[in-house]
Length: 111
Length: 113
Image (cartoon, rainbow over all chains, first blue to last red; front, side, top):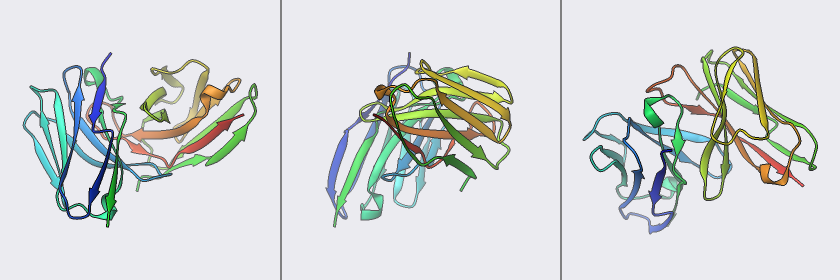
């Protein structure tokens, strides 16, 4: 079965610093989804990457998909306290609609 | 925000009792999912539905059953709750299957004592 491994598991950064979260798949990726979760709340969709080499940005968050490496990265530029939360990557195994998820990366941003 | 309501939001129950969690959507989406979230495991799929009365198992379905009698409602039942089922349960919906993003509810925190 396919597994997604996120690194790091947790991250504490000073406000204004850049950071990167990685998501590595054990099998071929047929798309990659990034979600953000605040404590006690549901998951908020951030971005969906469908093709190798694809890169998307939303405000200060950029995500890339490297199909050859079976990996995606999420980069936050000039982090702010509002970026704090849990970031999860998800992927459909075998190009199905169901998503499996990584274990999540907890981000704290210190003012 | 997608119209997804989970109820109850919090529940404490005793081992051996049956528990039903409800997911209600107002988006008329065909696909609905139940996930559980546990520390160190991310989200794991319990069951999903691809239409009224059409359901299938996910990776952690033992001890759970589901029903979908209407498009808008997807029920998750713990037939005899155990402490290992203490978790946060999330419902999700999607319009189609393939490359459609999932929309999530706010979750139900379940504690089995």
